[in-house]
Image (cartoon, rainbow, N blue to C red; front, top):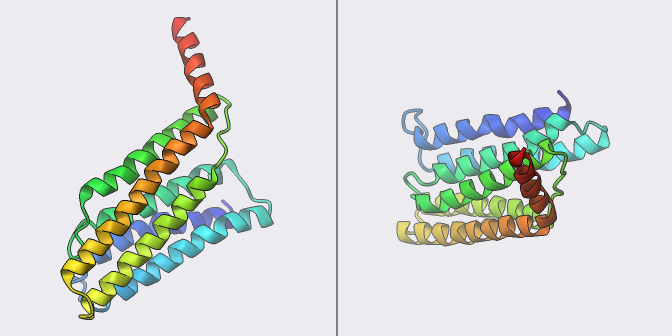
Length: 202
């Protein structure tokens, strides 16, 4: 375990905490007005851990196989958990949008794992990194909209509609980045399918 991996685990740990606070804030005695600021604090810690885990891994030469697996997994768990949480009141995002994120990440993660096991290293794409930025910006936007709503500065309809549109755009780009990733690595994917076919014939 390195410092970078500990930072990665922070995102995995914060995901259920974020979800529990959002869903059970009344049980915990937290005001709906205060809740968004607590969630904003947790999001800030998560995004900082995402920004610095890779930096520390490279700076201290602590790049490990565990870290290569944990980092994208932690990102996926953290962001999908947040979007899934937002499908519940008061934000009420359409659940279908979350399935887009889940489907995209599941397919890409499975593909990368299988290729890695067969000795094919699929390189990260700029579109994938941009996807993470778009999702982070979208999550923060939704929280800020929640702050405006709970402060009486925004109607529920405006908050819901703006949040839904923003997440829909993020989901559309996530889907595009997944397709672009597969297309850019199509040679590796074809080799994988070909080798699989040859092994099946044996």
